[in-house]
Amino acid sequence: MKRRRQIYEGKAKILYEGPEPGTVIQYFKDDTTAFDATKKATLDGKGVLNNRISEYLMSQLNAIGVPTHFVRRLNMREQLVKEVEIIPLEVVVRNIAAGSLSKRLGIEEGTALPRSIIEYFYKSDKLHDPWVSEEHITAFGWAAPQDLDDMVNLSIRINDFLSGLFLGVGIKLVDFKLEFGRLWENDYMRIVLADEISPDSCRLWDATTNEKMDKDRFRRDLGGVVEAYSEVAKRLGIMPESVQAESRGPVLVR
Ligand code: UDP
Image (cartoon, rainbow, N blue to C red; front, side, top):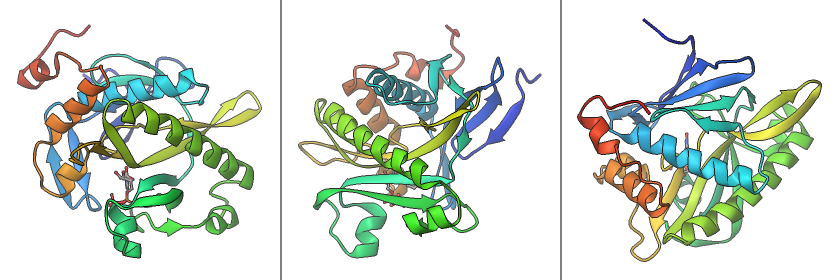
């Protein structure tokens, strides 16, 4: 028997109707995909780690006044969030060249960028999330100029804060992807950070060895994906003790 009504199932998460209007439950799956979902796997314990890591980072951001959709973690795999209207953009912030930027512009991976760069990708599986400019975004009405302004300002604050937070635990924040939503409160709308922030959506390199501690371990067949995510959680001081127990079988729900 299903406990809740499912609203949406994505590649790594499921959204369920929340306990009251205006709320949604995000369930973190162990599934992972790359390259337009042509590469797939199930990684035992990944969902638990991402739920915990995203909870921690969103709470820290809430605490410094960055508005987010996050309300609270409910259990090992679920968190309660505010219902928002997702803006169909992936906002990527980069500090060090890697991934598609290196490929597209021929800049060697690992090159420190002269300044942080923000890029936008239009969220469309059918079109393979194409790179778009502010011109496209405002001309096609995906976001208004004021929304875009808010997203840029929030992205810069998030980058400054998270770069420092990660560096404090010996991790370089190479790049990351953000999603924003419109939160309606009566007739008033504001832009808030939505989705998740986790090693699935960030590039995280060990500050001394440059070892990859993120989804590139899966994309590039480096192995040790869950171990790397656990190490990120451990360094942040939030390692959920029962991840291992959970991957072996049922555990008590706290
Ligand atoms: N990213 C993401 N979801 C996507 C595409 C990218 O979370 O659908 C993240 C990715 O993990 C990296 C950053 O955004 O931290 C920049 O990714 P990039 O444009 O280099 O693309 P990739 O090389 O991952 O295809």
